[in-house]
Image (cartoon, rainbow, N blue to C red):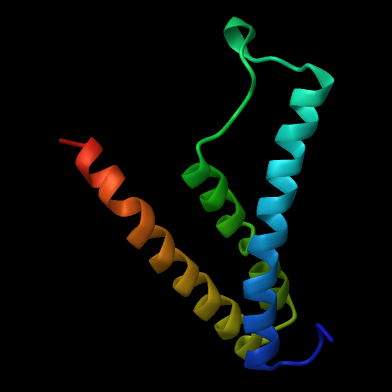
Length: 103
């Protein structure tokens, strides 16, 4: 499946990987809390939701790099389209918070 150079496969990968990345990061933080791993000041290790979503969005770099190595340009375009849509959505949701915090 990954060997096919198809824009729809790229979009499917680009939509799925951030969701799995978010679940993985969220599960890892929950596991650390369950195990009792603490940060500085004996506080629970957490990320803001917007940071967790941004990290999971950056997980698309891995399949993008893989498609680049296989020279699957159309699949790369599909991943880029899905990533751009997620990034625009992220900025619409969290952009005002970030821009207002800078004032």
